[in-house]
Length: 150
Image (cartoon, rainbow, N blue to C red; front, side):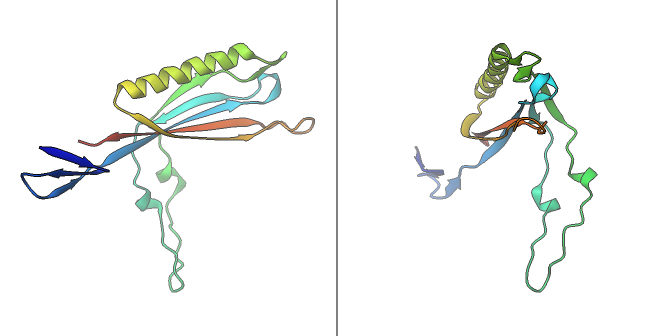
């Protein structure tokens, strides 16, 4: 008999608690809100792994040595990149593009769910187009998934 308590599983036959562990995955959607369709929009999902500890240093009063990792070592080259459409085209905001992006993101979310991932958090932010003289503008959404590790 197995009883699940929070994230800890206790097997009554063994009397030893087994901690349930999870893995996490982030999918990032970057949508351009630059006028005239000049930006680039993508959905990114990393396939490779990185251990953050390799690129982290701990700062103390006695030791303020910084991590000396090279940028090329931090970069991940094993990832999926899905082309998305920009929010704007030459005529202004393009609702068909937004609907197309929604369809692609929904497809990814459904695929993740079918593969055992549970959507845990959604974070978004925007650096919007500020009018004349401001050619920047992106809308970023991060989808954080988790699933149980066997």
